[in-house]
Length: 242
Figure 1 (cartoon, rainbow, N blue to C red):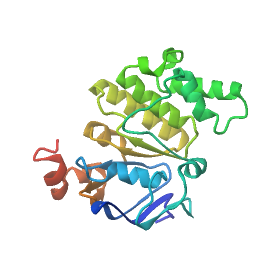
Figure 2: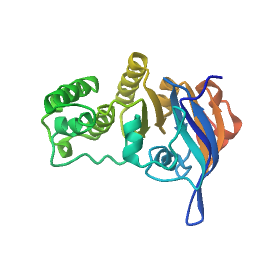
Figure 3: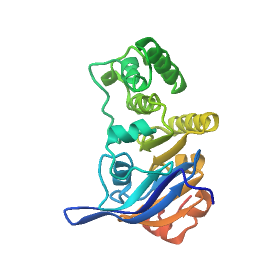
Figure 4: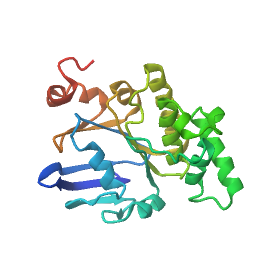
């Protein structure tokens, strides 16, 4: 197997004696879309916090493009090309939608004009160009979710970590977001890790799935194999995985 683009190696994390992650390991290849699923409290968001530098593992290593990023700060990891969204969207309330996205573009743009053009292109891609002058607090939940993705995409990441960006969306909205992510992945080779409870999205979008339960990895396989996995069905999918 070729060298992994992103490597998670035996990472563990505890909070006041509570084990959030326990010796979790997996690899992600460039341009892969990887789903992270599991019940609430399985350690999924903690995993993203560790990858993005918002927390440091008690043990283990995280390697990105051959570089150990385990102890780097969030801004350092962002500069290397890893961007993330947050489960609870927190746009900058005093800025409109376009300005929110421009904040991401300014991480690499040389001028406000260039940042504005790129932000407009990202909003077009996410299907909300008509909301560019709206203040974020006036958006619907689906629109706020898209804004969160737009802000991350505007940083031109190599890896995008999506934390439940489809939660609360209607089936047709989920399908639209899946189409957007698949097209971005196809056109740019963007590597995507997505935490999702919406199995409709995971099955349609992901090349591979990692399943966490009580901080442990209990399975890693293709979507087709995961839904047949006995322990995954018992701990997460229930008796009717379809």
